[in-house]
Image (cartoon, rainbow, N blue to C red; front, side, top):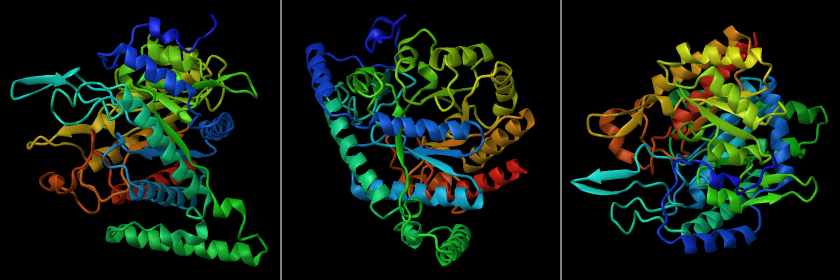
Length: 447
């Protein structure tokens, strides 16, 4: 059957807000549909080629960024810090792990959030749950929690200006390897990380000096610029549909809100709206795969979302939890491999390891995150498949939201800088520490 970008509207759908003014919502969708695309089909095709390489074990996907972007905390410094820490992680993985790195941010569109309940109750007052700044506001009042269509427009314009900054950073000199010493953030690294990163910088600098002495152009594009792509969960389908356009060169549909989109664990129903919508766009597509996923479900997703078995099209993002991955992932790998399906397997070690502290902070323990990542690599090696990437909720700032790491964030110190809109993120130190550990796992996997 021919796919239409609005066909999802006739299918079962989960995790959508209920707008009281449907006429205003329709006007907003029409306005969005007339605005310029945020990304372009040629960029999307470039990302798909890079992800195809990762699915074959020839490169590695680093995907990371905010749990949920904020309207109130939107600042250039926050974007720059996120970009810098991803550059640092990429340098570690490329140089220490000897792998080309595909850099994809959870940014410039990561506004909508799925929730475990449609409503939140505090002191006997029951209101709609906060679903991200693109839908409603975090403040616990009736007016704030009312979904507002105009927020879709605000999300579009913030995404556009964020993309403008990211493109300037990627191509305007900030990504220059000769300037790696200037990638430092505005706070201290843990001593162990500082030493490791300083040693890495020295090695990279010597390598660049050697290349220049050999006559390689120090102004070469590969040294001075980088490719950086955007992604978000395609949760709010009115927004995604409005930004879906036909590419004039190929005649194909592309969701021009981001280079890559993904479907969450709660919305991956085979015959539901989100899978139907993303089945028709040519972007690379991710699907979160949790501990309840069966081989039949995963193979069904492969058929629905990648019927042509195209390399670089489908990213299965494993989010099982450190204590469940060993018993659940092997059977999925076996099933996909036996059917000859080409997918990129990446690890989301964040979502399956969330818990609440005694003082009611939602957090994640660094040792559990690391345990799941190690298991992910070990299981792939055992099954003869490729660990193709990692997917992290993280910040470029010095937040205190996940416990552990070299700085040893404790449950009692979470309140110091607990700033997330929804879920706890690794801070920049923890993210960089994890990058060194993943680099070691990549080197070991290649042996």
